Image (tube, rainbow, N blue to C red; front, side):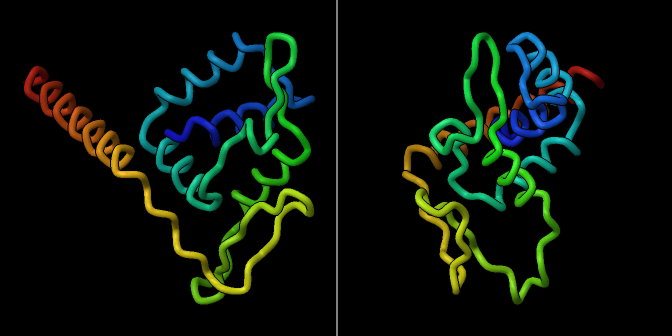
Length: 140
């Protein structure tokens, strides 16, 4: 499950886009335990905006005991949820801090992850796989 996409989706579901931390945590727990569909969906949405950082990009604001989605956050979420064009015409987009979202002329190759991040991801996947295997063994 992609935490940042989940936060955007939860906040946009509230009428004014604001949720206190208690509500946000409750909704996050519900979605986190809802199964693979939600996790797969948030990963696909996150892939549409590489380098997503809801706080540094000012997509979400922290306000008196809660978080609120900004207009820019709503725009980014709308972009992530838009149906992609035909594969041959899909273009990468990037955030321009002065003008907003700008579409580039050619696809941009993804940045390589730092080696330690890739290692942590591998280790995390391995731990999850081992936990699944233990659970299956205990169930039988």
